[in-house]
Image 1 (cartoon, rainbow, N blue to C red):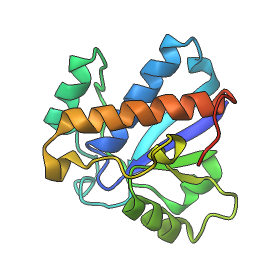
Image 2 (spheres, rainbow, N blue to C red; image 1 turned 30 degrees about the vertical axis):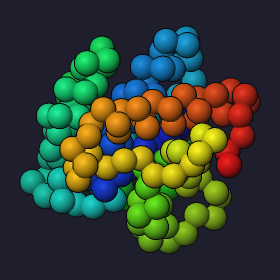
Image 3 (cartoon, one colour; image 1 turned 90 degrees about the vertical axis):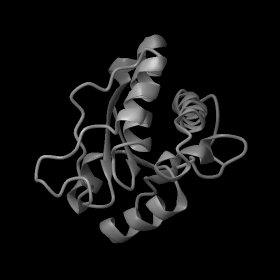
Length: 159
């Protein structure tokens, strides 16, 4: 089983969107048993209360528009000890990648990647916290998750 953790700044928009989109795609392709998928934040801003925050309502609404539920998901913070528990850490943007390297003290096993680096164009997943364009973020996440799923089937290579 491949263990994947999607990572963004707060774990209330992009990374939970990626977590649940990827789970949905894997399920649709009959491959859900191949993966353990979760998501986390590089910051503690959404876990300050000790129990995490729910997925941000506009992100949840965008997922629901596509028939995907994120019910029960609460934000969690990435920990150094997570490095040994997962095979891949998939960040949404360059800042997430830098923060993961800082939290883990490097990436000796080459587990850290940016989601859109699995696509032909690369780049960062649009951050809807600032853009308010949750539909664009959903499109970025969907394209990236499909490319990642294809890569894990051996159909594509990372950039």
